[in-house]
Image 1 (tube, one colour):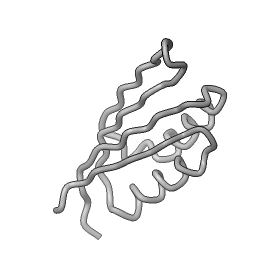
Image 2 (cartoon, one colour; image 1 turned 90 degrees about the horizontal axis):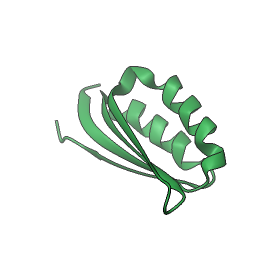
Image 3 (spheres, rainbow, N blue to C red; image 1 turned 120 degrees about the vertical axis):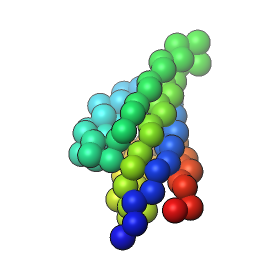
Length: 81
């Protein structure tokens, strides 16, 4: 399967779930090219942006696991090729 480059945006609204998010990101660390995390204290959330490089199946597996975590929202955008 062909690899794609993309971005993944993660909003952690329940900060007690940050450990769960980090465990998933560690599990899929081979896909992550770059990561930026911003704690937005005024709103009580954390925003994480990832640059990823992997197959659509791999990236979907990661975002699917992240999306199942309560209090976490995930969106992704991938290159067409």
